[in-house]
View 1: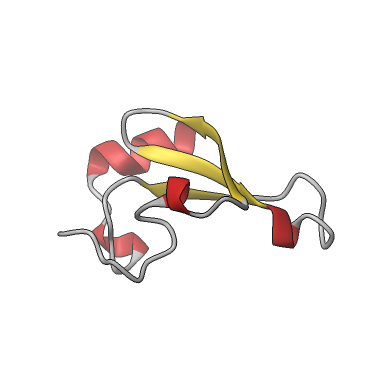
View 2: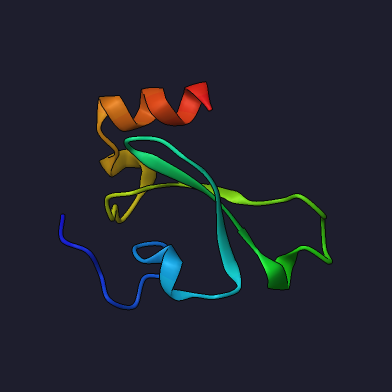
Length: 68
């Protein structure tokens, strides 16, 4: 699936307030400054390839997300 220009997760480096804390071949662990006051240390794990839903993840992506 091609990247979506409006998706905040397709290009996390373009948002100066979003930080890539960890990454592997298939996914990122991201933290955003705007959300750290709610729960410090919280973040999201997202696939590096744009997916509409979690059901669109490949088996390799599922395994990588589960192990991290």
